[in-house]
Image 1 (tube, rainbow, N blue to C red):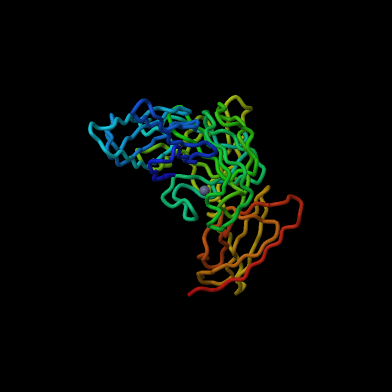
Image 2 (tube, rainbow, N blue to C red):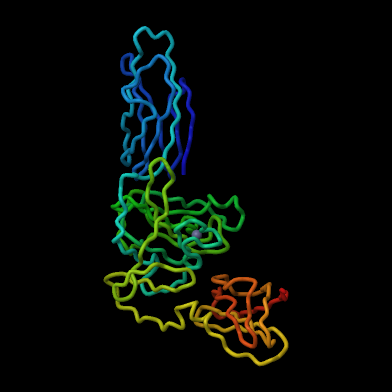
Length: 378
Ligand SMILES: [Zn+2]
């Protein structure tokens, strides 16, 4: 998030719409024969700014470029320009850049985050840190929440950004900047981002304090993505650079601190709530499902087998050939939403079944249909 706005002397006000509905404004005012330059930070979090410029005929009390971190909701003066003695021509050309956050703050790595959904509910990590779909080089997590599902604060702080007017979601690259977002500033200067929220789906106001576990918003399918989910990341500010996503630890059973991994399931455990019976591992681990290799009779064909486990649906490829094969699968289904697929093409060992994917049952009680066509790869 970096904005560059070249400005020329003559205009009196520059607006930089930078962080949600808030704005960064460049202002100047005359005091006698002096010009005072200031920047207004309308956001609820600190902003770094860099004011660069070329002056003719003026002397500045601060040399350009001026780097400053503006407190939230403040309008500090950054420079005072005085006409040089004997100057015949006065001109000023400035540009303003801004980045969210205070780069001087050090993230507290001892904090344990809550999984950001209702206590006792379990969800899978559809895409983890560095995930191949859209998290390359990014310490971000996609949790498989459904449309309308409640999102709770992973950590307490102040709500500093709300975007909630977007209505569209899909895989069109134009939608990358159209996800609804709620950001929470923590007391160590890091910011949690909760993305892809339902349109008008936040229950908080800008500047409001929230505690860990408080209801924030409802999950949606806005912005870039194949379906409803919660994209969660925590960032730290960097000097004159966009913020960097950093890894976080989550509260697990018995006080464990967990790193959330792609393909695994986690139950939200919020303090002060009734204890949660730990689900048996077979229902919690995609990896354990995929490690199941049931034997298959020699049929000389390939079949698809579906199996429901609570609100999830598993699809297995059964290889009835007595040799290992590699298949490129084209799946058609009804009433199943994507969740985690093991990879396509699929390597299928001889005479056994291989987990192809785990899906969400979209409408409980309605019929589930599935079928596939496949291509045998050499
Ligand atoms: Zn994501």
